[in-house]
Image 1: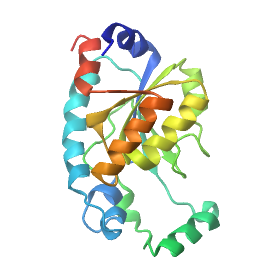
Image 2: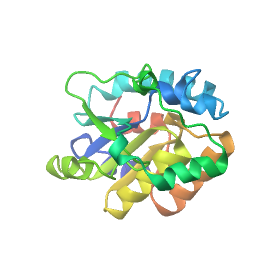
Image 3: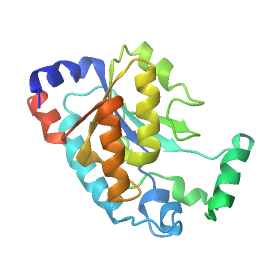
Length: 203
């Protein structure tokens, strides 16, 4: 691990911590992931780790963004609906499960609604980053192999440095997480541990 290079890359003044889809739908019994048959215990444990990390990171980071997957009927995708039907996946929407799960935004932190897997699609995310002169995205949250990877790919294509602490994300399965992080590390960004980031920030 080249901590010197990482320290330059994740300098607080040019970095944003992105927390993706830490919502009841993906972390709670009865939510979408639970209904789809995924193990939600890793997501629950992730919430604990994220809050512990945030207790330190909030001391140095001024740009913390929480994304919330949001359903709007006029933006419903026929392609996605066909995908769910083909796979036999129950995607019944329950607004009660759209709320954040344990990892809650604090005053001054930004909440951006998200309508697709990537945080860059149909949102003002890129404009927000440009205005704040952000160069590096530290991606965390759910799911590693779906929304986190989609955001990593789109962020890299827009010339942002991508950094993902492996212990602050979870996939739809351990295997999916492993291969997703391997792919990202090879082509789209750098995989680190949250302790590496804290060291870089002197925490």
